Amino acid sequence: VVVAAAAAPPWVDELDRALFGAPWGPPGATERLWLIAPSAYARWSVVAAAGEAELLRVAVAPGERRRGLAAALLRAAERDLAAAGVTRLFLEVRAGNTAARRLYEHAGWQSCGRRPAYYADGEDAELYVRELGR
Ligand SMILES: CC(C)(COP(=O)(O)OP(=O)(O)OC[C@H]1O[C@@H](n2cnc3c(N)ncnc32)[C@H](O)[C@@H]1OP(=O)(O)O)[C@@H](O)C(=O)NCCC(=O)NCCS
Image (tube, rainbow, N blue to C red; front, side, top):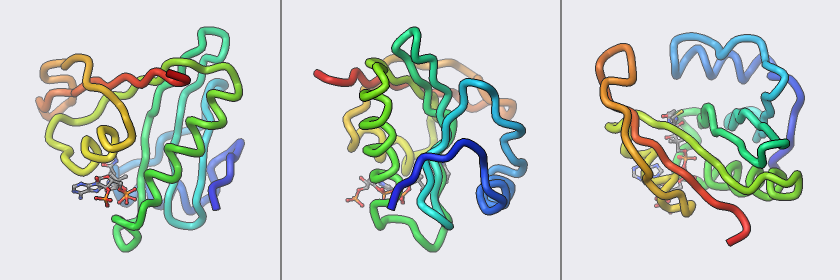
């Protein structure tokens, strides 16, 4: 069951720390979360006035992967964001993150550019966009 949440519960911070080395930090005013407790979350930044949202991070606990949780989170967030008037979604991902790139391409996102050496370790970022309601 996917639920939208205003703030990150402790398990989200723990998963963040385990997978990315550090929790995301305090939520900004534009941040929104979708959760499948206690093992998966998607964190977005939403600028509803501009009709845009950016997927900041999606993560699934290692033992729960390939069961469709991330895809379900993306579908729920996209449905809710579309209902809130959002029409265009963005994300950036490490070029070598094959699992995430397959997930996004499977979900209808389109590659739209690259940022060379975007990450601190020199890896490129691949940019994706998804138009809603088309
Ligand atoms: C990327 C991630 C979120 C995918 O979560 P998931 O719940 O396993 O993904 P799903 O089960 O919903 O997969 C949906 C589709 O994505 C693709 N996919 C997902 N993981 C994949 C993998 N390891 N290899 C290839 N394709 C993959 C497949 O097309 C899959 O559909 P299928 O299982 O019917 O073939 C998960 O691997 C993860 O948490 N990784 C670490 C964090 C991360 O890198 N996040 C993204 C950047 S912020």
